[in-house]
Image 1 (cartoon, rainbow, N blue to C red):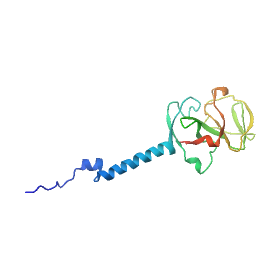
Image 2: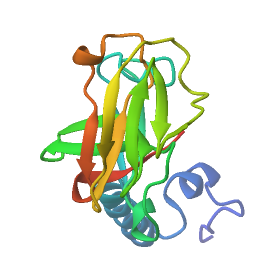
Image 3: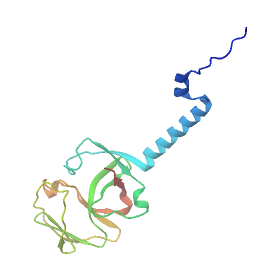
Image 4: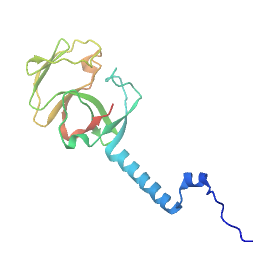
Length: 171
């Protein structure tokens, strides 16, 4: 008598590598390539270092930067962005508070744009920052962290050129 193949295929093998192992290998290779491209050029991981964005972003947490979001429009006030400082390894995480062409100032801790106070619900800690009015250039954005309780001199803030903005931080 000749042996016949079992009526039930090996379902564990089919679930792990599929009915056609060569096709499964091709799909895995494509998935690996897509994952590498997305993680290097589309969703860039960034680790929060420092306390300048507290309480919105905590130190040591990893977030992702959407590097494609500003291809169709410019950053808006309130966006949390990543700014390239030295290559793609050193980036700052800051909030956009001033847009190109605006005049920005801080009076007793309150943000003023073009002579009017701007509410900032994301600022949870009071501050007493003072800054004379400053005109923002046509290709610049004014960025600052959410933790305004620290002295203004200890806080990295200021003008960011548009070409240095990598993308918008997700979540």
